[in-house]
Each structure stands twice: as structure tokens, then as C-alpha cells.
Image (cartoon, rainbow, N blue to C red; front, side, top):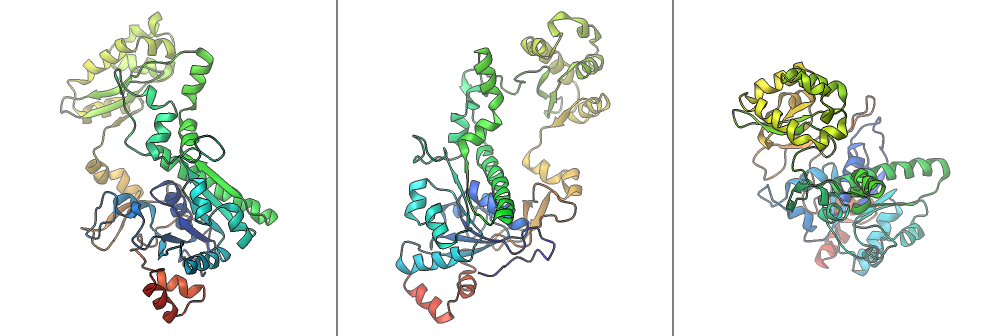
Length: 403
């Protein structure tokens, strides 16, 4: 399989070949980051398309926004790997690959011939990166689960929301977090292979990722034997901390932590005497008496516009931020100046699609968005040609509904 990267000779992963059997977010975003850095990533999907392609459609063809984000810089091959010829094609692809990325339970990996033992029998130095819901080797390992499963089973959702209503986060942080940890693991495995010649199996999972992000809650429970109540938008350990409503119906987040910030806040709101009030002597006491401080802040904000409020908080060097709608993010001058969103055309989209850039920047070898997400099967003939199939053979495979 040839390298379809156009990242140029300085691309970090130029020449690295990746087979992406991922769906939805955890595996596809991992392979997208590898593609941003120059890897040639082939998305292998069912003839009718992976189900993640069609979730929350935003184009005339039915592709969804998350799909467009997570599959840029990739080529698409459709393949029925359950057929005899499909298994032959899979073996040829694996033989020429450096990395296989997938997210499915271990039993499904084995059934698809994507388990590590099967892969390394074909290609001894292959790196397998797999993402699951709960990790391999435990009583939940064969269960399937989406991002929300990691959230609710990590202990985090128990602590967030309203007093009588736990609320999970609409942003799929367990999925994207797993993609990031999996990418780190893949790069470590590549580094190890460069030094030793050995491939390995890299595993990521939603539950431990979510537990990593909320580990402090578990530590607090284990050592102190108590769970703090759900606080809505208020801080879990500091005060004042909340989203405060402004005169023009905007919202501003303020988070005060530590004595220097608290002292500046007291001066700003005209309550310098609170600095010496024993109820507010440290962060924990301020949190325990947070209703008092948050009420003071809410009243102080109520007669100011969002713009006025942010200017005052910035002048006092206090960490504040406006609540943005999605449109306000799209229009934000800092987002525009920094180039965080790259406009990429896609067939059937109303206009160029705003894709988040590679979420880290390297000064010498930055990631790049070189191409849009692929249409279904767009590169099937090209990819099969690279592993030795002629045009007539590809036509026959289409007739047999293998590709």
C-alpha cells in the first residue's frame, strides 16, 4: 500500500501506513491526528458505509459533522471482510501497514481477524491500537458502550448537575479523551518499535479515560469518605465560582481560587472586609460558604452588561470568560486570528466546513488538514491497485459485492 500523504518531506509520520477500522470517535479521531501529522490513513468501512458516517447529517449526501471532523486526511475503501476474497484483501492490507486502529469489543476483533495475534502472524511488527468501552480482561469487556457509559460509570456524573438531577455532559469527552490517550500510546509504540523492531498492542478505553479525568473525586471519596453535593455550575471546591447572568441576558463564568485572587475579587466588588472574615479563610471554607459569595457576585453582575463585566474582571486579573453560543465561537476574533477553525470544502455542504485544526502545534512539523473526509468508497480502486489488483479484478470484486 502506497503512501497517499501529501504532507511533504517534513511531515512527522510521512511514510507511516494506517488501517482505520474505527467508528464514531475514539478510534477515528486517533487516526485523524496521525493523518494530520502525515500518515497515510485508509478508512476501511462496510459497502453501505459505517453507521458513524450518517449520524446528525449536515450535507446533501447525509454525512454528519462529527464524521467530517474525524475523517479528514483519510482515504475510503469499502470492503466486506467476511467474504473469502475480503479476507485476502485484509491480509494484503495488513501486510503493508504499520498500524491498525479499531474500536470494537475483543470478541468482535477476533471475529474480524483484527485481534493482535492474527495481525502479527501476518505482519510481525504491526502495532494494533484498539479502543473499547471498558477495557479488555474484566467482567464488562464484552459489553458495548458509547461515551455516556464512561461518563456515568466514572463517578463524574454522580457529582454534576442539579441537586435532584444528575446531568451528563453533552460533549463526548470520554470518547475524545480516549482518542487522545490512544494516540499517545500509538506514538510511544512507534518510538519503541524504532528502537527495538517490535510491534505491540496499544489499548484505550472509555471508562478509564473518564476515571482519569475525574480521579480527584475518587481520591476525595476514598480518603475523606464523603461526596460533595451536585452544584450546578458552581465550583466543586472553590468560591465564588459560577456562571453569572448579566443585564443584557449574557452569562459570564468566574472562578476564584487562592487567597490573592480572592483578595482582588473582594476589592473589585467593594467588600474588602471579607478578606478577614473567618468564614472565607481558605478555599475549602470559601466553598463551604459559597452561597454567600456567589450571591454577592450575582447581585454585583446583575446591573452590568456582559462587555462591561468582562472588562472589569480582566482589569482585576481575575479568570473570567463569556458563555459563547456556537455562532459566537464561529465569529470570535481570537478563534479567527489563531486559525483554530480551518475552512474545508465538502461535496453537498452548504459552504466550506469549519474543521478544528490539529489540537497541538509543533513549531517545525505542524499538523495540516490536506484533504476533506472521503466520500464512501472514493479511493477503493486506487487502494486496491496499490496492493496489486487490476482494474478488471476490481470490477469483478464489485460485481461480487466484495467492495
